[in-house]
Image: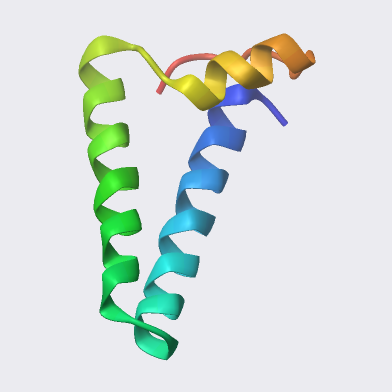
Length: 66
């Protein structure tokens, strides 16, 4: 799996988890959904993604940009 696909999968998993937690525990978990969405939005324009940097250091194969 490439870095790009891993980042997208991780973001999707975080959004689904936070929505489930918001439903089951507290609506404040939607803040996590907003954070993930804003991070994805800014990464599209700046190219800065903390998770991608961490994965690169861990040796995950780089991939083509979306």
